[in-house]
Amino acid sequence: MAILTKGKQPAAAHWYTTDGRPAHEQFRNDDRGTRPTTIRDAKAHRLFPSVTSVIGIFAKPGLETWKIKQAILAAGENPRQPAETPEYWTQRVMDAAFAQVEAAADLGSGIHEALDLAMSSEPFDPQYAPYILPVAEWVKKTGITFTAREVVLVNRAEGYAGRVDALFAFGKDGKGIIDWKTRKTKPGEKVTPYDGQGMQLAAYAAAHYGAEALPKVLAANVYISSTEPGRLEVCKHENLPELYETFLHACAIWRAFKGYDPRERRVAG
Image 1 (cartoon, one colour):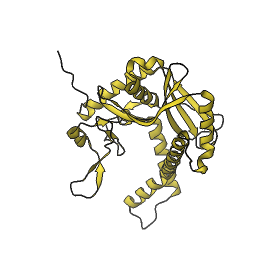
Image 2: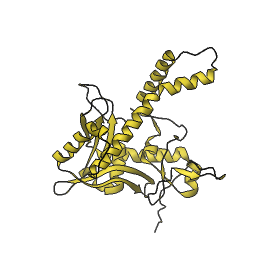
Image 3: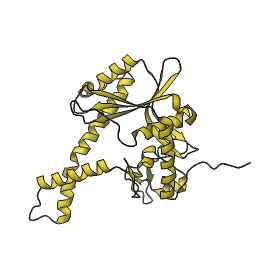
Image 4: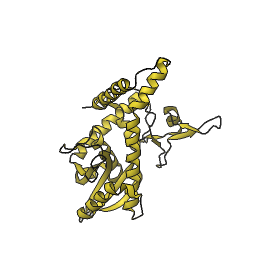
């Protein structure tokens, strides 16, 4: 279960304009390139936080425990050398601890890019075929038809935005939403969504289909195993209205924490 934490805005926080253009960075005043967008920039330009930024107000104890364990393991495997300052050694240990995280992120990005190309019937790097072909077979078997991919969805009334992996149609009137995820898996262990992933899909679905349509939307995380090539797990979220309500509470808390309300102003009368 996630708990609240009032921390700094994550370095990778994403922002969007009211018409859905990414605004993750701003030009520096000294003409030295760009810098990450800050909450001050967001207030000045009325930017919308991403769905993941809103959900980021929740701490994830399981993830934090894992990070601590990685740091302890890395410290044991990389003892401090006599000539090293504490600061240098600490940074070296941190770099070693999270090198695998960066490698996993690179693999996930590569799979995601290859998947998008494959869904467009375009050639992709063959090294990713063991991960992509099972997804293509699953899509063919289910008979779903993609109606949009990699599109930014904006909810101006609630003041958030985000990029969705795929929207799809099925059957006579069926509509749905998919978020592709890479996940390290172990043989025989069931894959379950992490905290917040259901809320993420509910928020995207409400932005595109409308909150009133959520009971009829099929939302699923499709997990592509990075450790068992060929394994695919589909986790459906059946309670989108409840998940969306929880997300709206998170939006209210995010606004209170940040002192910023980007929602459209409603005119009485």
